[in-house]
Length: 187
Image 1 (cartoon, rainbow, N blue to C red):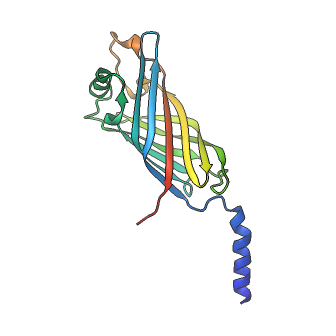
Image 2 (cartoon, rainbow, N blue to C red):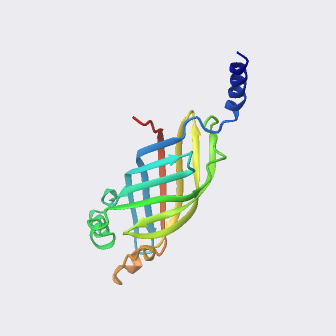
Image 3 (tube, helix red, strand yellow):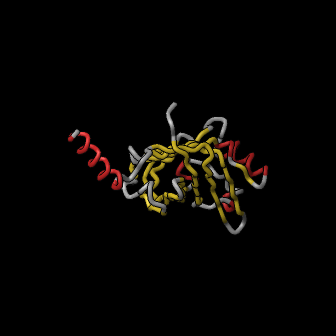
């Protein structure tokens, strides 16, 4: 009986200090957008079908997105993006995998916005680029969401821009990511 009482006290003492109740979250409808602005042209695209896993046990996050899922306001831009620049048939996916992420300050039991430094490898067209940024992980009534932004250059992924349109595509392209996560339950 004494052993059970000690165990119960230990659990009651530990539980309020536990950062996380559930450790792995996922989504199949994360949103990734990119934006390029020059004096000649604004280019914006959105993909709302990215897959992401946020793992508190491993302090990690991963994203994967189909390149043909990006939608543009102008259909011709979308065609050029897929056929000429990204070559989506040859390189159908882009991905991000964190190499370092700090989720230790996030309490899944307390509502709030938490800053989580993250570094990782962004892979586009089989070319890798190290990305470092800060993610904002939000906890609201037990629901987890995240957002981050960073910039990339077409040169980072050896995307050749023809001289005829070089002035229409920014040297630095802003990328924004947002995700609303659900608890991942293994079946």
